[in-house]
Length: 211
Image (cartoon, rainbow, N blue to C red; front, side, top):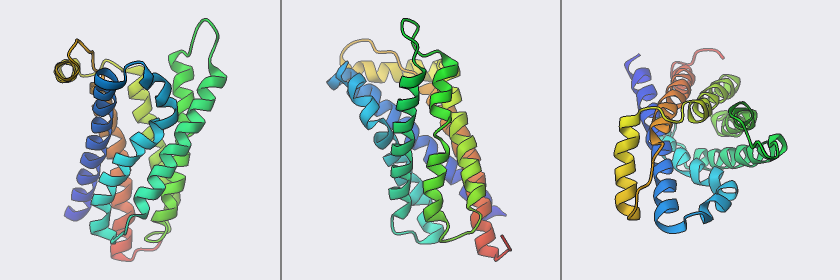
């Protein structure tokens, strides 16, 4: 039980650190180096730039329990990349001229493709457990929750946003607002949901319980 709890906590922390680091990197690079160019690059690179740190940090936790050689990173990168591309297509389809993309349509655009993430990750996970459906459901719920926080509660944790804004502004050389607070909350939510699922799946593997 203690090992299961520790795995869930480590997974949550790894996921949260990954999404927060990616968010801050986008804000710093966008403000200090690329400016508005990032707005044009983001639809192309967003999934890969977000999926890579998530895959790597989750793999660091996972490899101690499974001995994975890196397949988790590959499938996570592919999952986030694929989900991001579909999200961008859906956003373009749901975009309303002169009104833009409201919160509901934006959430739909990002929530609908989330099963792609868990679906591709399950191809790595099936080597250690047959409970891949549980993982796909947990991944879908966790990342849908993440995007819901990002879109519907974008100004969450204003003290964190203010602190991060000072950091980004100091690097950029001019005032920049940060919204990393919502990413922090969303990362904890996604990490907790998927971490609990992963600990249950790997606990079954360790005890040899039936699927």
